[in-house]
Image (cartoon, rainbow, N blue to C red; front, top):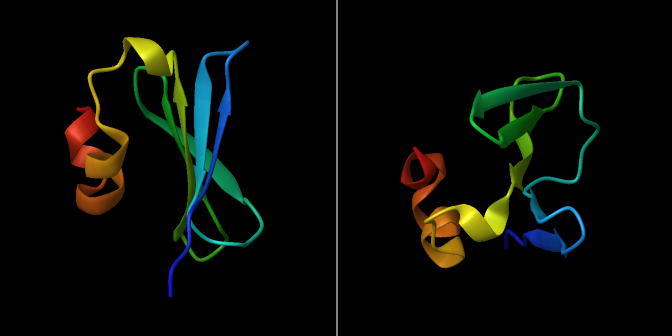
Length: 71
């Protein structure tokens, strides 16, 4: 079973979704305030969303459908 760890920092208005328990080898900003962390195999480890309260994304939809809902 895949379990996500989701943390919200209200001071930074940032949310982090941990997808896989692994070391982050590289990070890439794929859109305005959307940062994807990858492991050394190129697999997504986590996603950080800055200014989350301003984004028009539904968190449940993001988890089910993936990153395209943010673009």
